[in-house]
Length: 360
Ligand SMILES: NC(=O)c1ccc[n+]([C@@H]2O[C@H](COP(=O)([O-])OP(=O)(O)OC[C@H]3O[C@@H](n4cnc5c(N)ncnc54)[C@H](O)[C@@H]3O)[C@@H](O)[C@H]2O)c1
Ligand SMILES: [Zn+2]
Image 1: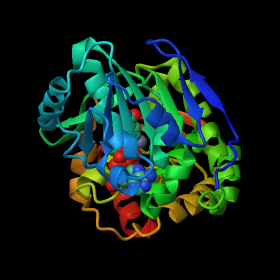
Image 2: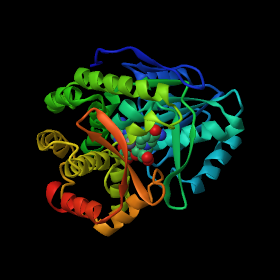
Image 3: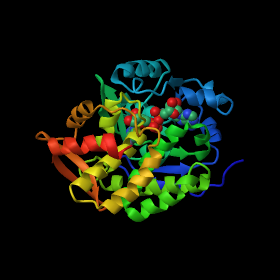
């Protein structure tokens, strides 16, 4: 049965002009309608297998590139292969790349769209909750190089985004919760009232598409305010990195065994624990937020994270300067601040207590 749509579209202003995120009840018919000699499909391999009937016409389109959704696939070393494929398929300046997949396919396509002939159009059909509720807007592409995650990147928004929540039916439970991690992040930035609302509805997100659409739309709307003010991440957009310095260090210390949004969920909790120890967040608020975050990172509360590897990884965060860590803290919830923190014994003890006692 096709779900009714709660929302239609959300326009976003960008340096490239305005683009829109549309909610759709049948992305496959929209995809099939775009097939032509001027479109080049870049498709997540799992989506191609799971939806081979729905994507039948698309899968036999003249130009199609399948992507195995892994961090290795979005590395600089793989880019020449993708470029060769598109050149072999006769890509031209007025052609369009069509991305169907999650954040991995998005990052690859957006990067290719920026560098090919100094910029060609691309469209995005996000198939993960993380991509639908967060990464699809904001223009960023991120590529790994020489083992460093997201060290390369560009700003190139898609010309259009089509969000169909029906496709999330096949998403794994862990990848679903990874998307919820980013939704929780933006709601926490908005304030405690926003967190309260989603915490109350948490159990319904997987069961009720209309409720899920409501939170996807709300998350995009909250992110829109920030990226329209600072698309190039010079000032206020930094606050979207709440939980990310800790989260990226957790991802790195676990060789990416923990999906991004789950690591961010842990990272938010860890940032809040630092705020608590700095006397900036009270115990009642820490506990209240921890309760919801702990449900979302369930299953990873005992995942081994080596403290030394974690501290080494966080010290290399690209936001740091002058040997100080630059961290985003949400003191008092809704009061998001960028603070400088020495990588000292106090910080080490806070991280150690969090990983060994608080998280469990
Ligand atoms: N550019 C940005 O703004 C931005 C923002 C956040 C994250 N990212 C990047 O995105 C990547 C993570 O992306 P992600 O979490 O969206 O997931 P993903 O693209 O890594 O996909 C996760 C898994 O889900 C599978 N999958 C995708 N859609 C599915 C569906 N509908 N049904 C069944 N399986 C499905 C994929 O094949 C893969 O196995 C990371 O590399 C991260 O750095 C980019
Ligand atoms: Zn993120």
